[in-house]
Amino acid sequence: MTIGAGPDGPGVLVIEPMGNAGRFLVEAADRLGLRLYAATRKDIYDGYPDRLRSALAGVCATDLADTPTALADMQAFCRRHAIAGVAACFELFTPLAALLAQRLGLPGNDPLLARAARNKILMGEAFAAAGIPAPRWAVVHEAGEAHEVAQSRELGRPLVVKPAEQGGSWGVSVVDGPEQLAPAVEAALQYTHAHPHGLKLDARALVQEYIPGEEYSCETVVAGGVAYPLPVVRKDTTEGRYRIETGHTCPSGLAPPLVRKVQHIAARAALAVGVRNGIAHTEVKIPPGTQTPYVIETGARLPGDNLCEIVEAATGVNEAVAYLQAVLGRVPDTAASRTDAAAIRFLLPERGGVLRQAFIPEMPGTHGEFHLRPGDVVPEPADSSCRIGHVVARAETVDQARRLADQVAARSRVEVG
Ligand SMILES: Nc1ncnc2c1ncn2[C@@H]1O[C@H](COP(=O)(O)OP(=O)(O)O)[C@@H](O)[C@H]1O
Ligand SMILES: [Mg+2]
Image (cartoon, rainbow, N blue to C red):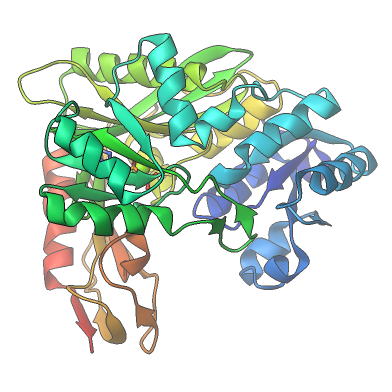
């Protein structure tokens, strides 16, 4: 690992660090001796947790939803603070980060392809052009078009309906019968602007072929156009109409040749959407009886869901460090230094309401964290915003880590009234 020159080391501007990966970027910047700056809106900055606010060397207050203004403000800020790298923490701002890096002459992603990493319609086109295995899809503007797609049977059954630009499983439905189609399209079309910046979204929806099988994710760090694969993680989700991630485990438990295939296809997906100096989080499913990973999506950002913590606990690879190294034009440090295992389990409510009580027992080798507090509104379990908290377990083997995390989750209590 390259150790930086202390707090006077190079500066990196993070475009909206408030997501899950923000805290890992803060730790990584500290390890590398970098100055970390944020670009965000003033009122959003005011709501940052104290530990994030105090870790920042400065803030570029701007309107990230207004691209020309944001670019001009950030460009001036970067010149003033001698910024040497630009990172995006929020998927929707990855195209903005690519444009800013280009303007400043800093290492970044291909601005012409960058939108394909946030927009699932452009992403589907990029994957098709690169010959990457991915679900077949159709674009729909309203339920009638989705009915036509379903009736043609060209995409098979069930179908997946999702927004063109969203994350966290928001508005994603697996649809098995015609009566579920109209509500699914309505759920996917509801997102016209993204919270909290008010960024305008492509409000079209996709209808996709359903890919069966186990699901995995894999980050790829790319530096100077060279792809370095990171560890593969197994993903658990709910079944049925809403697919919410319920947990992740690293290592994946896949046989080494299949691990390499997942890493290879994830790297191809990252390159196909223009990642050149940065990181991509790619999700794949492997249909039973095949050795072919199908790419569900990729994003030019660090993973959420505390995956940075899980991957580092299991392998010693710090993905946030590797990302910052890539945006600074350095060779990323991707060598594993451990062969342990780690698992995370999310606590989900059975229904929406108000959180009355929540309890996570203490067990050696585990730690828990709450996302919501008693009195908070718990959304219906239709996307990841309903999560009450999580438990992380560390152990020597995958089976032990999964078992430990499952035990703690089973003994945890969530009361929603
Ligand atoms: N075409 C598909 N086939 C099978 N499952 C899918 C498909 N698309 C999405 N899913 C399931 O829904 C989840 C959320 O969809 P995804 O496209 O990853 O949206 P988001 O950007 O909200 O994470 C995936 O992790 C996967 O479990
Ligand atoms: Mg996803």
